[in-house]
Amino acid sequence: MNKAIRTILIISLLAAATAMHAQQGLQIAGVFQKYSKQKGVTMVELSNEMLETYEMTLYKSITFKDAEEAMPYILHCLEADKKKARKVKEVMAGGEIESGYYQLPQVKEDINRFILFKTGKKGTATLIYIEGELDADDLVTMLFMKKN
Image (cartoon, rainbow, N blue to C red; front, side):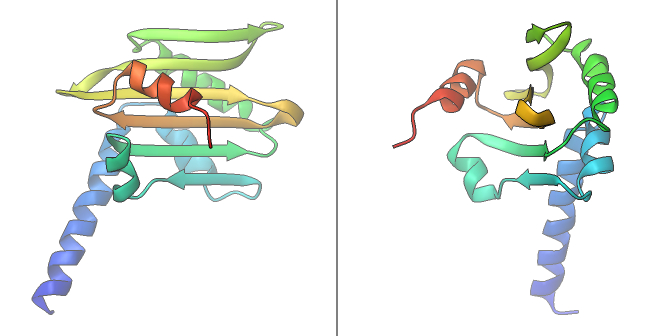
């Protein structure tokens, strides 16, 4: 095998292993694995170039057009991961979670980890996992900055 191709293959495998390891130990990893290829579900992972722009090492989101069937599993996973969180902020409506922000303990120095969750109108739901050097203030600024 050509040395360049072998090098690219090894780098790709290491990147994939790092991404898989990133959510290791978190229940929400199961949500991404179980539902990412289902109809009506959109999963997004940012490229390295985009990650660097926002001081992230990993960004994964999964959006459900109709989350009714998946919701019990999603909520179960969030509840388990919430127990590990250092900071929890949730908005509840009618006893149900509308949105959640969870900052998890670092597993690597200077790498912060966040879980974001939001339900929308007509049964939609979005789950996001972010890892990187950005801190909570950076994340809030990024989420609420105005688009030009």
